[in-house]
Amino acid sequence: MKDMDNIPELMADIGTRARAAAAMLASASPDAKQLALETAAESVWDRRAEILGGNGQDLAFGRDKGLSAAMMDRLTLDEERLRGIVAGLRSIAAQVDPVGEVLAEWDQPSGLHIKRVRTPLGVIGVIYESRPNVTADAGALCLKAGNAVILRGGSESFHSSRALHECLQHGLRAADLPEDAIQLVPTRDRAAVSEMLRMTDHIDVIVPRGGKGLVGLVQREARVPVFAHLEGIVHIYIDKDADPEKVLKVVLNAKTRRTGICGAAECLLIHQDVAKTIGRGVIMALIDAGVEVRADATLAEISGTVAAGDEDWGREYLDMIIAARQVPDIDAAIAHIRQYGSSHTDCIITEDPGAAEKFMNRLDSAILMHNVSTQFADGGEFGMGAEIGIATGKMHARGPVGAAQLTSFKYLVTGDGSVRR
Image (cartoon, rainbow, N blue to C red; front, side, top):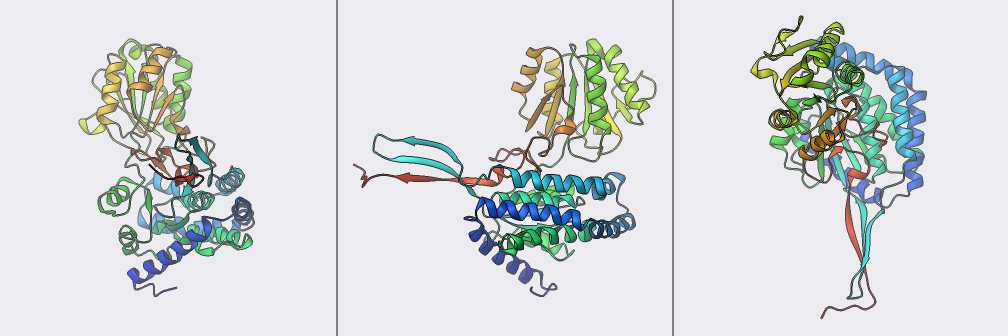
């Protein structure tokens, strides 16, 4: 390992080794990758006391740093969350290997036979804050897709991430795969992040996972292509034909289950025809659950609400706060989301299939939901085992980014002495 005081040299060394590992991984067998991930899962559980001990150090660091309650929740590991990490690793291990999958195949009149097949992206850089589970999720997904990965966790998750990384390395050794396939940047120095963003010779794509500040920095300064979402400004529209029981269940879960995740609901749009019935009921239920409801003038008469300001529309709270606005119809709800949304996740609650279809056709968020809690905006809940992040751009990876989305493709063309006239 190079001198950690010389960040450019350190990162160039990591990048060179990652590129070499990626060349080997591209042809690694599905069985070897599966063995590595299964062994890593066993290692996480066997070493859970060590991982939780490291997490305790990180939590103390986070408290001293003055992290918000939402950030501390993201940072926290316990046995239940470790079981989730283990389950995610095993789920990814069991998935069909995406590398080499034939996406399309056809013959040309010229005698050519053409196949489009999945191929690894190469080297992926992942820059993340707080959540130590991203170490396991990102490492596993990149490996499954045949990519080498450079992980740069946040300073607050340093010890937890290092312990989880050691489990992934144990899996690589057991499967006789290069340990450089999954590398963790071994310094808290922020200069390592800036260096990663410029490593065009070593990194094929950057995935930032964290708050608005981190993601905005990456999107502004990266010279490497980026899969990212800036914010999760998640809307739920309660239609005039919504079922009141479904509204209550879905909205309360979407807001209160975990407020610090990007799929948490941040704005409630209520059709005027049900504002004084279903709308009032769900707002009172949110207040009773401890949520601060920042309501527009038409809903401010509801006892316990707080007057919303202009800054409350298009805001990601990541807290027990939600904005609420009455709208005259579905068209106004769609217009509001287009103006203030972040193309992450938006939901309609309605029993009218025509309204649901209109909502989903006219909005272009990465994830659109009908009668579903937005807390399901998660790769694990989509059957991907885990996710490396939620992408809201228009590149090929959009929504939850799983193993298949961490591949590109190439064309395999065969003939029989074919020449072009």
